[in-house]
Picture 1: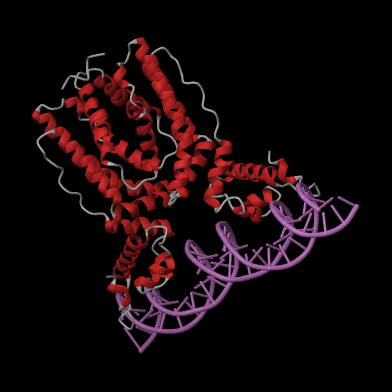
Picture 2: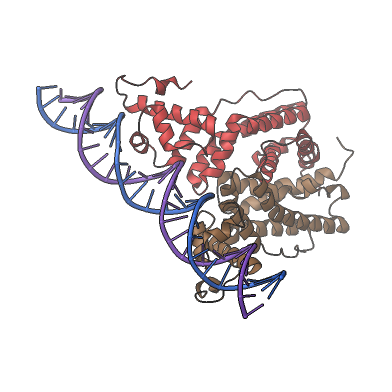
Length: 206
Length: 206
DNA sequence: TTCGTTAGGGTACGCAGCGTACCTTAAAGC
DNA sequence: GCTTTAAGGTACGCTGCGTACCCTAACGAA
């Protein structure tokens, strides 16, 4: 692992994109090993077989490097589940999200989220990937439910679709935990998500 | 403000609770002025008219001091609104919460939340105050709505009651903003919160 | 009142980590 | 080959956390 950096002694000097990639990979590896808190510029430089100059020429500070490195780690999201019923799909999506927070990658993201702190620009860049990826799956699942007649078209509203995800995120953030118990997921789906969709099924009623 | 510390030259030496209070007040003042990011042990010590020893004898590290100091700032929460209708009450509660995040106090809390980072214990202590305070108001508002016949008793569920608040928090956290536009609050209430309560009004339907 | 114990005050230090400066040296382009 | 550009090496300044030591005031018991 990270062979790129270690065996670089005596080799030819890298430039431009090659070096940039090496730095990003080194930073990503450090993120996975030590999290954002343990990501230091010196160690990244050493691991990439270069020095801090090369890094600071490309990223203005540690946070920016962290966010950029995280992009390397961001994986393509899987196909949304299709269990044949809305409840099963929703639970599955929630469970996947819940697992993601526990994974090494999720841990990195949590560290990054809390570490980036005062820089909304970077935060936005993080959410772009993590957030947008989630929304699509929920809309797909909802579409299928509408097609099946298990939900009304009024349910198709981005904020509504991702309510369950938002609640899970809230649970994790406010409690400072890595993942929520499964019972919480079930509760979110049964006590909030499904009733909400029911409530939106009759737009005229009040 | 902070007069305690500045005029301490030549006075008698403080001990125990008196000194502890002085430190906490100094730390709280620093929090308000510079946020958690700007809270340094040296400055707190200087402002309290003491030195770092006295601080480290009481709190193990900066984060712990920050959280303890924040308690000093936490205000009693106001009475929940009573506009006579559920929608108005909910919107008002949301607007208050939204303002709170923008206030200096909210700024401190945000900084603290992101700064405490890897210490779930401290995080939990923070949420104890900030979180619990919120829930009560929502339950009260819901109770009144139930009494008026505007909501069914099934709505009285802690997770359900605070859904709007959770969504707002999610909005703020994921976007890295200080406060959400009012349109978002309205959307949360009209597109999610009220439909959800409607959906829970008929437990047997499916 | 005196004397020992406790806790505060003063200060200096070690250490880590960020970001910068400056010079040397290799790669690329003409 | 010669110039320009960018990488490498290294050292440094700075800030801030947490610790160590020693001195001194307050407190309490004899």
